[in-house]
Length: 61
Image (cartoon, rainbow, N blue to C red; front, side, top):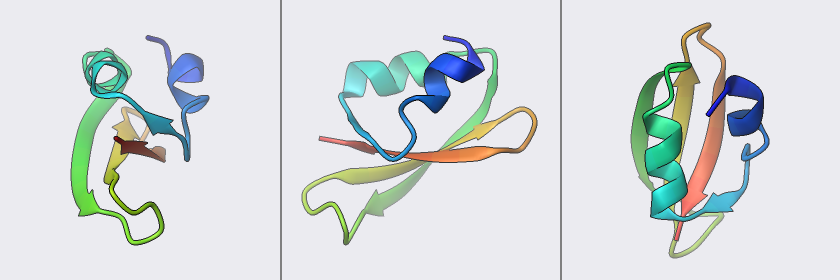
């Protein structure tokens, strides 16, 4: 996936397969598991950090 494709998921709930595809992108530096998010009960919060140090948050069911 390219950066623009990944950025469209910012703030959204994605499935584990999509998270894995995001994590394998050459544009992504790191995926941080931030645990359970209080605003999205039952969802795990992940922060995606791009190589240019910008970040987005996604949530996984």
